[in-house]
Length: 110
Image (tube, rainbow, N blue to C red; front, side):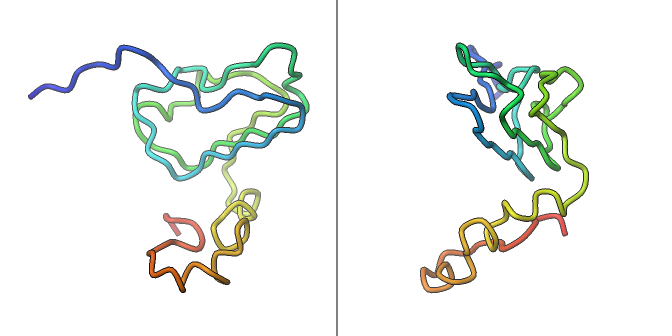
C-alpha cells in the first residue's frame, strides 16, 4: 500500500515566552514537518530563545529553509548539546537503570 501524504503539516515548536529552549536531536523527522521548522507565537521575541537542531534525519530534517531567528541554530558539534542528553539533562544514570527501561545515556550515533 502506498503511503499517503499528510493532510496537515506540523512544526517542531513555537516559543510561548522569552527564553524558551527546545532541542531536537538525533530524531527522525518525517515530511509532516514544515520546511521552516518553527513558528513564532504572537508577540514573543525570537532573539531570546534557544532552539537547536542536531543530527536529525529524514525528509523533514532538511534545514535549508528553516527560520532565520537569532536564537535558532543548527548544531554540528556534540559538545554544545551534550548537556541535553539523558545522562546530563535528567540525571538518567541515577535512576533510569532501576526502572528496567532501556535507554541511551548519551548520543545515539557515537
